[in-house]
Structures are given as C-alpha cells and as structure tokens.
Image 1 (cartoon, rainbow, N blue to C red):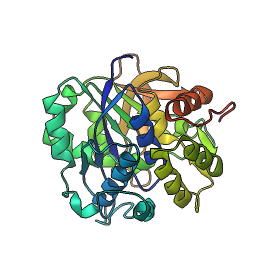
Image 2 (cartoon, rainbow, N blue to C red):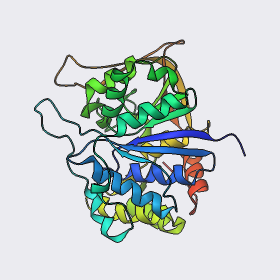
Image 3 (cartoon, rainbow, N blue to C red):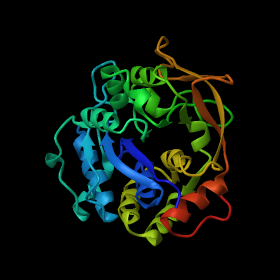
Image 4 (cartoon, rainbow, N blue to C red):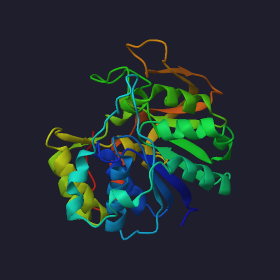
Length: 309
C-alpha cells in the first residue's frame, strides 16, 4: 500500500449532499488517514458535527475527532445558510447529539493539530472558508506548516453553460476566501464549480449505488432522500476534490494566480484567475468523468459507471 495521506476535512455537511458523499469516500479510502473533521456555517454548526458523527459511526469509526466551528454571517449580520436540512435523518442513526460538541473549538483544534504535525497534514476545505480565514489570521505561520491545502472553491473558467461567476463557498465569506488565497506559501489546489458540475448522477441512481455500497453510504443515501426533494441530481463537487488527492488522472491542472473580488457588491466573492507558470495556486481546468466515477465507486463499492458526465 502507498504511504497514507493525513487529511483534516473542513465541511459544511448537511446543506448540499456532496459533503457527506465526500466524507464517505475518505472513510473508505485506504490511503487516507482521516485525522479529524471540523464543521462550519449554519445557525448551529454543532448540528453539522452530529451529522458527520453519524456518517463516521456508520463506517464503524468513533475515533475521529470532530469539532464544531464558526457560523458564517453576511454583511447584514444574518447567518448564511442557517439550516442543516439533512439533520432530519439523525433520529434514524446513532450519533452524538449537538449538545455533546463544545461550541467553536474547530480553529483551536486545527491550530494545535497542524502545529503538532508540521509538514504532514493536508487540509481539505469543502465549505465556506470561515474557519480557515480565522485560523490563518490567528497564526500566519500555519499555511507554511501544511503539507497541502486543497479547496472546493471558486469558478475559474466560464466554459460550462449555466455556471455563474460566483461559487457558493467563496460567496458565503469572501473575506475569508481572500485571506486563504492570499496566504499561499506553497501551491494551493482549487477545484472550481465549472469543473465539478461535469460529474453528476441522477439522484435516484446515486441513491441506488449508495445503498448497494452500504456502511456510511446508508446514512448518505438517507440524507440524499432529503436532498432530492428539491434537486434532481447529485453533483459530486466535494468528492471530486477528495479523489484528486489520491488519483492524479482525475483532473488536469494549471498554475496561476487567484484573487477574490471584494470591491464590487454585485459580484463580491467572484474568483479571478490568471494563468502563470510559477503562480502560487493550481486550479483544475478539466475532469475525466469516467476516471472520477471509477475512482469513487471503486473505493466505496457499488457498481462503477460505464459512461458518466
């Protein structure tokens, strides 16, 4: 077996279904040492921690530290994406209740864990960048101590019809996204919405495959039943970023510079991309959907997809 990659997952699990789909992959990926999970956003991020715990317990894992993080507030002070709709399934699955998670411990956990293991941790962030922005402002040396930083964030090309200029994770907290991209001391990798939209399945097919795989994906399938009441597809945004950690053939990449729009209220949070051979960021510019689905379902189980996209 190849050397394992130590990963901390920062997630807003419970809103879009893809966070739970991503977590299930990391739990079954034999090359992943899932060091810990931190949650972000919502009226009560501890509810998201409970949902992450339910997914972990369904995989037989009660040893993974889970820490609740920051709420995300917009310019008006209102909580951004306040609700965690998929928490509706918690009554059907073993989990630690929200009250058992101490509030707002994520940033301290990230700081202590990364500092204790310099050069070892890959931080995979698949929600709004608030926890990371707080962490990097608290200690600007932390980015230097990471092995890698991988984000599901931004839009870097406009090649796909129907994808607007802004992506949700950057849009929720543009200032935090700006802090994260400005902090680059080694190459950050970002997988943007324009690429992730190319890997999706009809929700009924996704649920069928998740139930066939079993384990943690039984919880995900239940959460997907909540998700598909208002969305016909499962788009594998976050799992694409995760699989790219372990399979170099999933995406094609290009180096360059990323900045985040802060001046214009109309497009605040838009990511600006400029190719540059020695730039501090690397973005996914393409995806091989078949390679992705073979990688994902090859790890978690269930039938692989013959033709995907």
